[in-house]
Image (cartoon, rainbow, N blue to C red; front, side, top):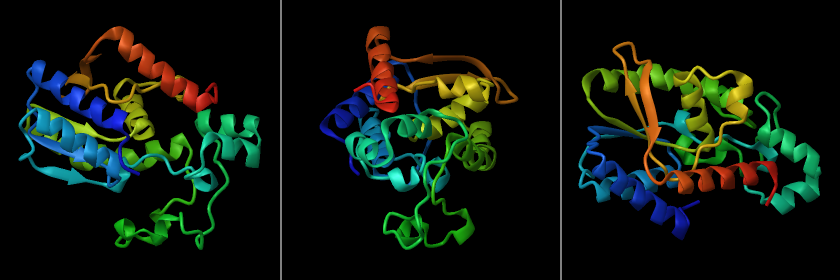
Length: 224
């Protein structure tokens, strides 16, 4: 699914914020999903850095919601009940109902994953699963780039970014469940030589950042 008009605006704004902060990514990592790719392209265009190398991986994809995939809040609540949907969306290790492999929404039907072993393709994921599939990519691909370059950009999704922040900030399972990643807001980490954070901050207006985080929280808990 492509970015909405709001998503396009936020991605361009993120690029301007990073440029104003003096950031110059030397390489960008994205998922293989359209929204992350578009976000990176739009942000880099604002920074005049569309020429930098791009690395893409399914390990940065958004969480696969199984049988909830592609359904809106009203549809999921009507089909499964509002209370169950809240638990599935907001817990750390509770899986939603899995997709059958014959379901067209299953990753096995998507050409982006044609080269992956079938056992790696999720039929449903909880946040714990996202953490476990994202971490190898951090160690094997992002860290090597960080060892060579001063600035690396990661364009991903709410849950894969939560997984990365969980690792960097040493969050507990309980803490990461309550973490809300505001959409389209660059989060900047300064890292030590061992790739642990020296500092981290969001770029932009604090009130707007909190508004976007609250919107994510409301969406996840069904408050809207």
